[in-house]
Length: 141
Image (cartoon, rainbow, N blue to C red; front, side, top):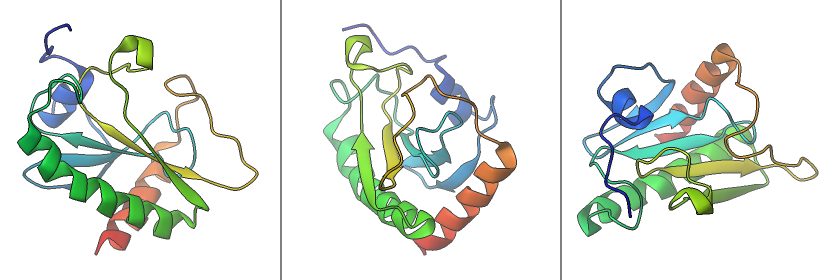
């Protein structure tokens, strides 16, 4: 396995070098909107601890972030009225990983609406993402 690269885009977002549409942040993770969403409300949970993916993450990182993953999934479903939620997490390029910093995708699924491609769709409208982020954050309370 390749070593963690500290200049990946998520590490740069966590350091404040690149903007994001933030939903929520605590000491363990940043929750933000995916700017290339597979569906309306596609949200990312990015742990702050550096790891390439699930395979090299510290167990403490996983145990601190998984309750947040569940909390965000519930909030996304509530805020978007999605019919279901897909949780995705990719490990290494052959498995579909495109950003080599551990992260979790919360992808709302709507009956009769196909999902867009992972890491290949169109960039979402920033104003729409900001509105969704506000709705999802409110649903987390």
